[in-house]
Length: 398
Image 1: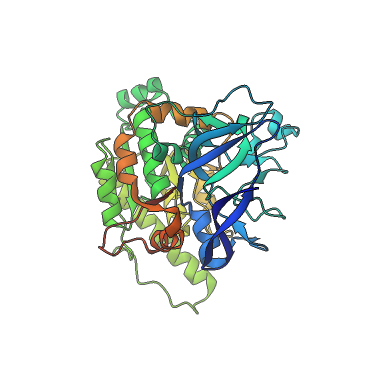
Image 2: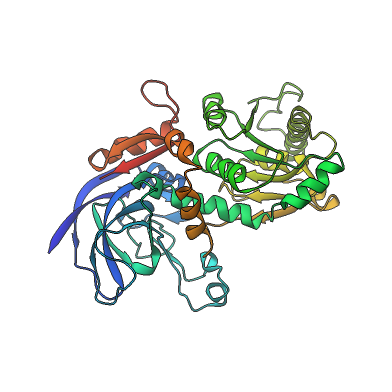
């Protein structure tokens, strides 16, 4: 039987390049030579801690799920693809039978199997390998205008487009009506990592907001946002807001810590609204791509009445949030988990336009060969490389 090199996680910080058997594709599967795979935050959690939240690695597991490659063989039932086609792999395997799947929301299928996730056991290996077999109907053909690296960005871009769609963004007519009333229609994105930058770029290229602001504590990453040529505004968040009193000691009563956190969030929100011209109305849409409690708290206060806060980043599972402030102004809090059936084709279509060319070149900051996989994960976890340059998205190539 043929073999393929694969990056296999055995435990925290224990990533090994191994040979795994690979059989010819059967049924409706195709075989894909994987050319590019982006390292996702969940992959990094597994590598650094041997777990991702409640999902613990219980057996050796191949990582990776943001992948693109070339079809090298097809199963006997495949009619939609041929050898030589380049594809982006969608690696969630839903049951296709439950109510969620039948309504198009297969991303929340209770029986979903996801490659490189330890949620289910036995684990389903990811795509950080030279060759893999995958269902043909979850391999999306890439046009010539989309590179392999661009194909590896389709998965996180699909997350972003799903988040935008879930937020029910204002139409061009609604934005124009608000403009006539003297009210700007602005969007705020917390986080200038790969997802935050892709989301901001998605808003800039597909929506009608008068202003799009990217906020982060990292100035070099904000510089990338400014360099994309999409008219994005940036906001450098203070690690300690000078308008707030010093934080209480860690052993202070919970009520005191909560009061300080919410006051700090209100101050940050007020600064963001004032600085970016929406002091009187707030941001129509807020997208949190950090999962950091302070950002979500500030996002609620920064939202306009009747606005929407979309939770994209996965962070602390239990958080203290000013729900009353959201309820009193009817700010909708919307969760996002991966993407539904609309998102992958939409992401490929957007990438094919060339509007995200600068995003691809700036967001993918490092390309590492498969044989140096451990170094790639170490680099992704540091935030800066050996020369002090920011690390945003690391792509492993084979």
